[in-house]
Length: 370
Image (cartoon, rainbow, N blue to C red):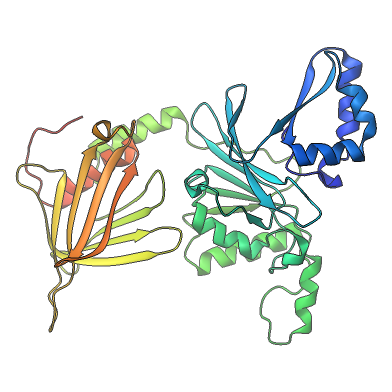
């Protein structure tokens, strides 16, 4: 059992569960929480002490923020979170499963610690977010649904489940005649409709899936190992088209587009949690001796020439980066750097990008590394 904090709506059944384990006289319920949370639980449920001795009942495991631990085959990282001045030792959890799936259990928090490694939060398969209202109400100690939209972009999760929503604080916005957002509490169907409309307006409906959770829902990942192999095989055999979008393993979403209306024009969009680079080039072409290097010139304007592009795929083994591949992007204008970074991408996206470059930019057959 992973406990995020000591509020009653998260812990009130703990004595009942402990009693059941004690009655069974077989096995121990392992509970993980911070030291501060444990002290609050001891004070709230003094009878728990009798259930924490011997081989039956509960075993409390005190964890520390930013220090990973394992529960069987699952790797868990607790992240320090703020949920109000009355809640000490509050955390959220990041779970990594044996098949490399990542799940963020983000119950009941208003903000995260400043020293959190943002790469830990990037690109989870699922994020569960506890919200109290649709509009921001920090006095609740929880993020709002509208705050969750910002986390959708910053974390780049494929699916989000919204839990804990009540919406009662949103009635306060009705006092402002100029306010155009929700001004009442909504049921799950109404809230889902508003969320879908927001995603549609912001152009994110095809990229993210935000679901208002209901009791009894079970999440299963859509991408199995077999599907991965099928994707990899088809990516090498089929046409890629003139647009390709990939996600890095850390910070970026990348979109490549060969402009079919303006022949010789190449667009590159680089988006991270904060910035968006919308770049245009002309005359994109692969290196004659290495099809993993792309060059492109700057657009010529009336008074100046735009930035140039050097982009190269590098084997990560030489950089001790494991199974991924380094995509080195350098955008520069004379001696001024516009964007420069080594971006780690996965093996499947490496194959997709390599195929896209060869198909669209007059590839020359050379011996490639596998």
